[in-house]
Length: 301
Image (cartoon, rainbow, N blue to C red; front, side, top):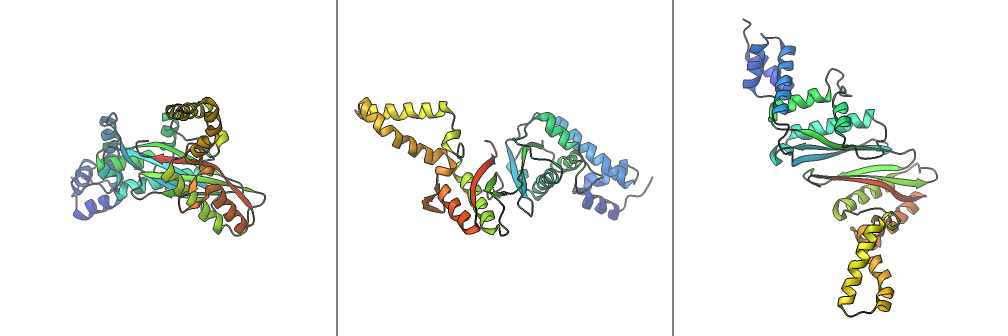
């Protein structure tokens, strides 16, 4: 029987971050074969995942990665069982690895990916920065260490030919936003102002949770519901139908200031709307810019 030294155990622990006791057992079971021991630990993680698959994953973290040229970005939500695990460096590192992988290997998803099949397929891919390990293998190692149900809940990727993609992750990593700004015409050589504007918009979305970008995008059923609520309130104040009709446009305008991103008051300067802030940023950069789309991930929402 091969003698299992402390150095062998430490080497395996450094490679997998699993406890010394589990590393020692894996090395004993593998008769000192390092690669086999790593495989055994991954299998242990897969076994734990299978046993805990039905456990509620109501905690987790959100990570955002943006390319250095600000032409693309990814957002990933990783779900787990406890808040304690969600806040560990291991969980953050795993989520960031998935983010980087999606950023490097995927085209624009056009929509949020939540499909179990699509996520399963993603997890079978080899990590972009480590061709010897799949994302699932990396996850199995993490599960072997944390012993919780952990999964990728959803992800998205944005890319643009000449706009700006930027994001924001709120303190605690339970809320993240990714934004694309569309630029009319050519992209300026100096995008500093636009990059900051996109970051400011992402922070705005994190705080205000808009329903859409512009009033024209609102579902007519939503507008009808709000209109009826306002009308009922005004009738309760004794207003007749003619007065209500005159007041209603102002009421809806106030609603748009809450629900529609471009109409919202800018949280850093409530004397201007998001549209006006973007106009100022565009003027400084020498172009016109508007929000093209956004994605907001919040744990439990």
